[in-house]
Length: 366
Ligand SMILES: Cc1ncc(COP(=O)(O)O)c(C=O)c1O
Image 1 (cartoon, protein in one colour):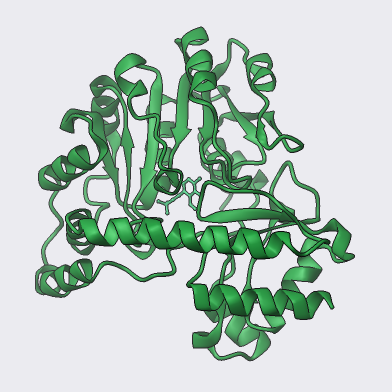
Image 2: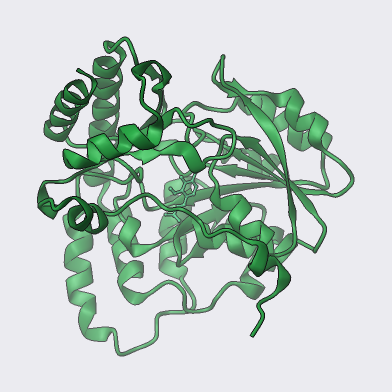
C-alpha cells in the first residue's frame, strides 16, 4: 500500500533523546541521568496538579469535556485576553500548529521560517502540501534578520513563523519587527511562538487586539511543568479562533491533562517559583559555561541556550556521545536546518545537576 506522495518523501522528525534510550544504550542508571536535551521543566510539576490528577483518575472511563470553558477562562485570566480569543490543544502547542495548518494551508502555499528555529513547523506544514521558504537569523548579532523575512515574501506566502524567544538561539524578536511584518502583510498570518515567554517576562499578546493576522502560540510544557500532559494553547482574534474550533479534534485534551492544567494555573506560587528557579539556573549555566574558552555560549532569555563547540575539536555528535557516556543528555543540533555540525543546545536543570554538568563538561574537554 503506497502512502501519499508527501509521506514517501518526508523524513521523520528527530526528537531529543529520552532517559530510557540513553540508560539502555550506555548501560547507565536511568535515575542518575541529567537531561538537558528537551527544554523541559526540571523542577517537577505542581503538587496541586498531581493531586488533581489522582482525584480525576476514577473518571477516566468517561470521555473528556468537549467544551473547555473553565480552563479557557483560567487561561484567559492568565493571559489577559478574552475567552473567545483562546484555543486549547491536547497534543501541546504542536497540536495548535497542526490545527492552524489544517485551517489555513492550501496545497502550494508557502510559509517562512527564519533559520535556525523550531523544526516542527516545517515537519507539520509540509504534510498539508505547503513549501518552506527559509529566512535568516543573524547568528553574529543573535537577532532576527528582518530584511531576510520581508524579502522572502511572495504572493504565495500564507504564514510566517516568528519564535520569540527563538528556539534554539534563545533571544527575543523585537515587537517593532513583528508589528512591521504584520502591518505590511495583512493577508499573511504571523505566527508568534511564545512557548518560552515566561522566562523572558516579555509577551506580544497585546498585538492580537491590534492585528487580526497575528497568532500567538503558547504551551504548558515549559514553565508550567506539564510537558507529559501535552497541553498547549493559542491566542488570536475571535474570528481565527472560531474557524479553528470547527476542525480541532474534539476530545484531544484528556481528562487528566484538563485538571492538571487548571490546577497548575491556579497555583500561582508554583508558577512564580518555576520562573525564578528557571532564570537562576539559566544565569548560573551561562556564567559558568562562558568561563570555558572553547565554548561559544549564546546568552538566552529562555530555559535553554545554544553553544557553539567548534573550538573544542569535537563535532556536536561526538561531544554529545562523550557526555552521554557520562550520563548527560544534551541536544545535538546537527539535524537543525541553519546550523552546521558544531552546535549543541542545553536546557536548565536543578542547581545541583547544573554543577555536576559543568564538572562533566570540564572532564570531557580536558
Ligand atoms: C518553540 C517551540 N514551540 C512549540 C513547542 C511545542 O511545545 P508542546 O510541548 O506544547 O507541543 C516547543 C517544544 O519544545 C518549542 O520549542
